[in-house]
Length: 342
Image 1 (cartoon, rainbow, N blue to C red):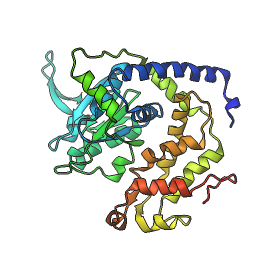
Image 2 (image 1 turned 90 degrees about the horizontal axis):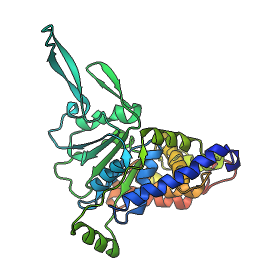
Image 3 (image 1 turned 90 degrees about the vertical axis):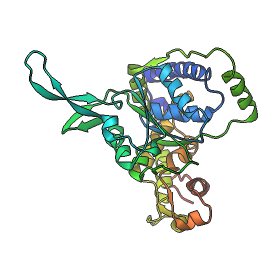
Image 4 (image 1 turned 120 degrees about the vertical axis):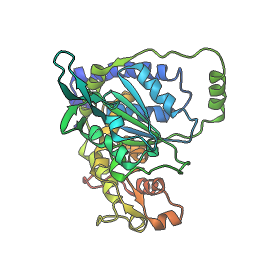
């Protein structure tokens, strides 16, 4: 499908979205200095209807970025500080015994937990055991919560942003692969450059605090999430995204030799889906109308980083998943016949 196949009203909606995007970025930058790529990838996950894992050392404004995003969106927001003693019911909710004042009869009533919101901040998600981490699985995939044999729908949009500290491992519980796979992107937050850090220190050590204004509400976000899915993408681009995911699997007949040597498990089909959805969201966030190969390549590190598991040999040689991704991006070439090749 070519960009010209889009309806005129959809093109007008993309142009309107570009105005909203600029307003959102302006409000976020009142509080967050630099980190442009991080902000872009968080917005991509939001409008692609995905979830986001932010990984970075303490003090890089991970929590501040999420709370600022919640401020500019007219949505319900809850924050959960994950700790070793946190129970699944502390997230999903629990049944409590209630007495009817009129009849005196007692009955259990479900008290909803903090997961019943639009934006959920799971702060330091790896500090709680896997049993509690798993309380998020159904909600992130199906937008539902099952408790006490009853299933409750979540209000849409529903967006989970989790933070994780990569250097402090004592007392933490690595996220299982099934949980990691629910996150569309794994975004690494790096230290600011000198100029940005000077501005951060100036801004945070003076009086006054910027107050971002609200830009977008729930119905508008749902509308733009649907618009993302209407963005044209050619079979040529889809084939390239699928080839990147398939070539990362050592069991695949077309796997490259270094993948067979260094990868325990590769990316599954959800990676291909998120590469395309993320590329579509990136397209309209940049005011364009059709997905390109460059969109896939730009998103590949964040989408594949947590879905490619290096084996012991790779770890022994100091190779991380991002090193394998970079080689895949170098070796897997788009192909006009519908199959990406070397």
